[in-house]
Length: 337
Image (cartoon, rainbow, N blue to C red; front, side, top):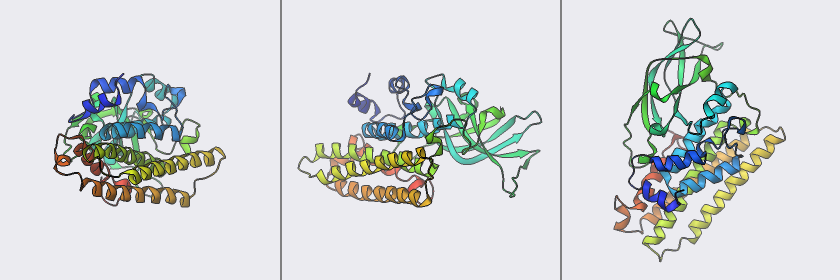
């Protein structure tokens, strides 16, 4: 088993997660922390899973991000029909990933299958995925299918990796080892069994009831906190005279608040309660404020690290680029991903 330091050395300057690291991830089934035990996953509780994601994002930001988004995509195991989910996740290397955007169409056939075409962007972990998930607008005879309100019907699909063309077009300054690429699908036929709807579940677990907004807020924020903790570790190596006690304490306090939110959410749902819009807004506002404050604090520290921190082959530069790339995610800001 690789140690955290060995993993960091392998990740530094890497363009994707190495085979040795992926083997360890698969061995520990870390991509299946949210997959129910009935399908062979770890079936972690919310706090437990967040703690794991913090530890890995602290080891390396790109690695933690890939684990977060791919394990988050594997959450869709709960939306698939049980026979399909059992079949797919009997393999410990099953790894979903894809795009949340609507990038194409699914043409309904007379036999009930769908022919999918389109282009989707920002599929994190693309080189390591076994299956891609995508959202497509349903059509029939080339015309959009509409629901009762007149809106286009959108359906999510799972397709095998060998049915997509991966387009390695990531150009951002950070998150370079996440393998976040676009992918294209040309005339791929998919049965209805491999489609799903986000808010329809075939499992009966409290995690099924967690609003997606909260799940996204928590799983992304824990990454930023992990990266910030790693940044602090490396900063003090460059400037041992810096006093980062308050920064480190703030990271720990915000992490504990987030984990308390996780326990509170599960407790409410276990008691058949409903997560109010007010509670969702409270968590979102806390997360947004935390990211804003972390970003300003990291910049203040970075300004004090000198020219060494600008070396493109240095660890601190890698963390800096990863953090400020990851925080451009649309979840905590208006605009694009």
